[in-house]
Length: 202
Image 1 (spheres, rainbow, N blue to C red):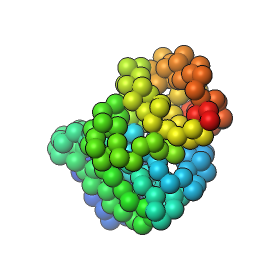
Image 2 (cartoon, rainbow, N blue to C red):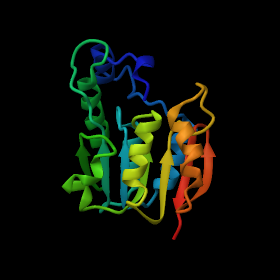
Image 3 (cartoon, rainbow, N blue to C red):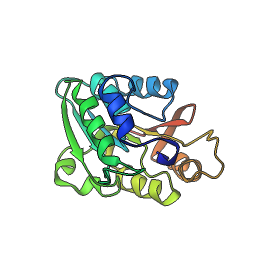
Image 4 (cartoon, one colour):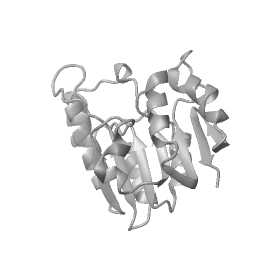
């Protein structure tokens, strides 16, 4: 998520609170529909990079009542100034709470560290993971290395900003094309806008 392109501040929070603004996401409508389609019926879903919880809410709506939704985002605590992530965190928690399926595990860590959290480790492997956190090459490498074997055989990995990016040399796109799509443990399923869907081989 490139927060420099988004007005993260109390004004947006107040507009969201009174219903003028919607929660913000950089996923397209087609990407959101694709994610929801692959999430349907999945019992254990992890999302790395929650931001304001738009996709998280759809994941929770798509999972069964006994499902587990693992939401991973460090949410740096700066309540004032141009990067008021405290407001984002409050929006995300409220948006996700508007759906009632399953149980939510909030993990305020990076994607690379999350699988080693005891609350997460006890739920592994997951049926689906959506990687949309640190978009740098090294950031996606850390997320991929931490999660690639924590997806069950037949499970799904979705990667945002991994193909067709309008900005050149995006680390998440380079790592997906150079490493993830060549991983013998996974097969390519489809691409929608900047989203890539991979499936772990059985």
